[in-house]
Length: 240
Length: 362
Image (cartoon, rainbow over all chains, first blue to last red; front, side, top):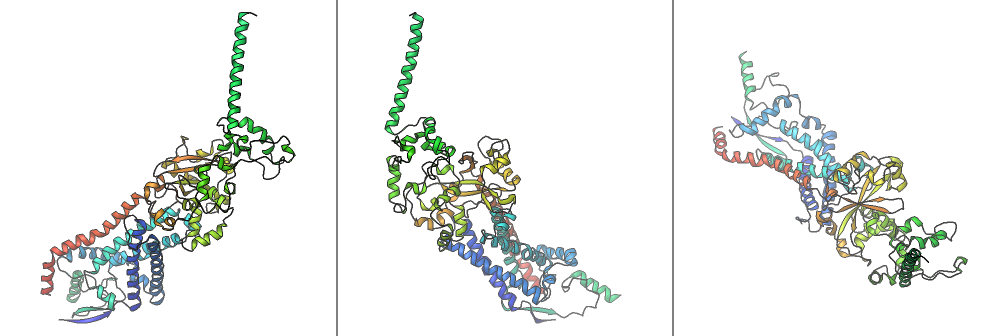
């Protein structure tokens, strides 16, 4: 027996932020590519246009990033819970999710994780987003701001090792973000991830199951439904 | 007279004849207005007064050390100041040669440019200090321009169309954009932070400061450690790593400078510099100041300026001085990002029936 339920997974501020970010980053990648390889690429006609588009998109993405941080940290107060993997995630969750992507998925087994509004990301997503949102994005933004204001922020530019070092860092971070983007878009096609990011709601098939007794769930591990060891634990508890 | 005396006499006569002939040649050369011989001796007569600040009126002082380094010094004072009146020290003016007499080609070119109606040759060039632009730091060139063009005003004016105009004006000699040069090289010069703080205001390092740092050795050894008059990338790395208060600034400098000053539309197109490609940016020099106030130009390893981190950490021209190794690392990173979608997608395609079957079962 199963019935469909709807979860409000992505609130509207996050959806707006996500799509501003997505379009901004794509524009940044295209204009950035023209700025670095002007002899081969001419996407935004003139070089000056490419620079102006890149600067504007960079400022928009930086503001939207600050907005994202403010929303999760101050308004919702769920930033740490959503993005920092807990002990269980590190001990078992990561391996389990990796096994799912590498083997179980191909065998047709369902994901060991199911998203809830407070725990939207599986352990692998958490770790990846932690690196992206707390390391890559802030660093690419900061180096971008430095490059945009080389003269007024001269002392900071020197502290960071000179303009060439900052350019190199900005470029390599951007390449890493592009690499992440490829994986991010691909993984979104593995499940129903795109629809919630558009409308906010996710349709979930609820399987009718006996309610789990308190204390049975392995601490820190929430998506219990398809986790074979959990079912085993449940059975053992019932028999005892 | 003994035959030996005769022989001696004839030798003396020979020497006398040679001396007379040589003097005649020099005199002849002076009569033409040209002499590429050593005129240091004959210049001394003039410099004995004009080389001392207290002896002559302000404005007629000539720095002997710097003057002797110029090409004009080799011609001798009289080449330009042909006849010195006998009562000259009493305040009588000495005639001056017109620059056109020698530089007619440059003069014709100059007359077609924007500056022609504004100033003559001596508006920019002090004939007693003329130097080849290749042998001075880019900032020295701009100091000549800033005698008339207020730098703040120029920054604002360029800022109307040029992004980061302050940075551009600081890192480029004006002549790079305002003369029609075809080829460029990177001219680097040493800047020193004020108060030896790494982050202090940076100014072109003066000879005395650098000499104090170099100690007994010549200044160039601060960079050219093996003193082969050639700076390798490794020497640049060591310099950037070890010298805390010194840094290298680079400027894109024209290799041949025309004298037709103009506003070139091609230079308003950013791609002129930013896509000129790494080929042009591979030749670079370091201008090291010397005791006479000139700069000694030391060639740098080809392509060193393109090195991502170490060659000149403060010199970067977007699109032009990108490092090929970094491009490859970036490409490798992007390829790593594609492994997951391509690899996983392929297996996903192969096992699609498997999943459909399971879904059907559930």
